[in-house]
Image 1: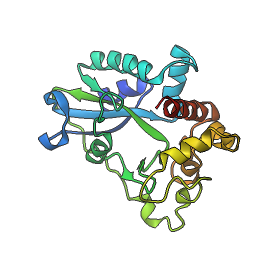
Image 2: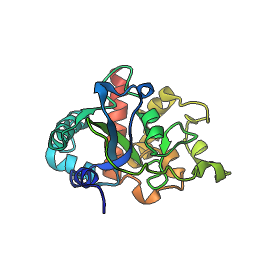
Image 3: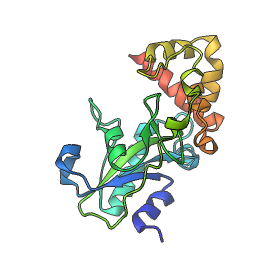
Image 4: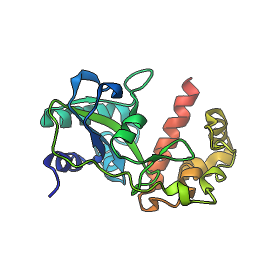
Length: 218
């Protein structure tokens, strides 16, 4: 039987993506005794967002409202990857929480969801839970000889050592970037892991437009 906290997270249309009991080295605020990372994987969270905010709504503001309600119901606090500058170390927490591995793109790759998931919050609990630590599974990129994710980007924004954000954003602003804008990141699509969780066009387009708009504001 699944733990009731994980069930409540799923009922709120979020996905539990990992959990751990933090140490002082983890930089978890508030003296929390247990951390559950939550986010989106598959369409449920985005569908709820569209119902409650519409396609023109702000995802970060909606996330804060939705997660704060969930956290209050569960007796937890919450922090967000968009909260601070520099941001909270969500990728380090993912390693601690058994939520996957670092892919050649620098993104977290999950054994089930592949590259098609994102962290939206960390729930911070004052007490620890009796939950077995999740396993990240074998590193899928270790046996992927071709590594198509590194060659799929039309402007070569990924080289295995870093991400050329400017090249990506410039491409999206041009007519030839239409496929990426409408379908989503082609490097992500090239990865064979978790293809069943790839974003539908509406969700992919929403995220790409938000990314381009954020770059234009800088």
